[in-house]
Length: 350
Image (cartoon, rainbow, N blue to C red; front, top):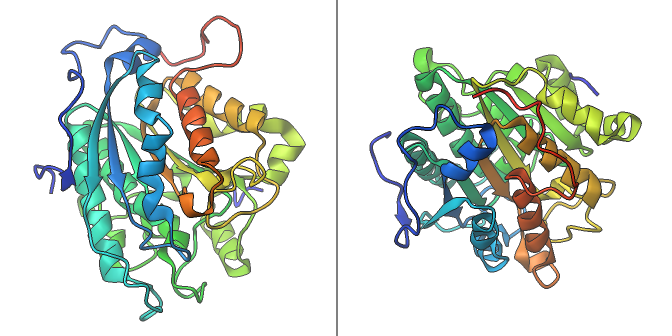
């Protein structure tokens, strides 16, 4: 289907850093070596403020319990855990003027924006530990602002079962976790669409900067809106027809050394048979091997520069199985491979 404040430190209860900062000179390093040299910052955002089910607020701790930091460190990566951001509690109220908990959603996303932007300013690779997918508004807005200021081209891979391109006019639920892509493209309340503070007051993203992968649940009105805006969507039928390899080749086409690649990984991207711990399961998602290939090909690009891990719901999981799988896949994003082969020569030159 082809519808084809910067200086403020993050508001977090952070443990002391556990590794050194980014080395002074990385200009001659290969993409793989650069990833190893660059510090990664974990930022927890324990809220389900935008979701339709409770429990995603426990996602950051589930990922820590599953050993995310240690898993990345085993690959020679320097990992700093900044702790969890603090923010308003979830009042669990019905929609008001088409949005549930809008003031709280704005508050959480401003805190995420500040934290992610601060890490990018330090030269770190931020990993947002959600939390529900409305938090992608804050993280991607920060990345978009950073890219404008550094002259980088931005590409967003949205790995999800859902297009998340609803508006308050298209969905009666009012849950903002179904609206972040639309808000990032300028469709929504000004408090969210203007979060990035882009020059000229434009939205954080243009539709042509986004590639959606694994989509298999789209509301009827949302589907028309996706087509009208020209989003490039690689749905599950596309993956079934051409395979994950060709899908990822298409989604990653055009990346180069001047591209900042942001991956927004909603755990419901995965088939619920292997990842039951999410609030909005949709059958027919990628298998374990398809998901591994997706992550390995992203790693091969050498362009990954920021990451969200969202919608993990431990209340619905089985013995933290989904969190462990998410950690396994994130390892692959940072270079772990199940294949015995020489490093790819296709990564862009530094």
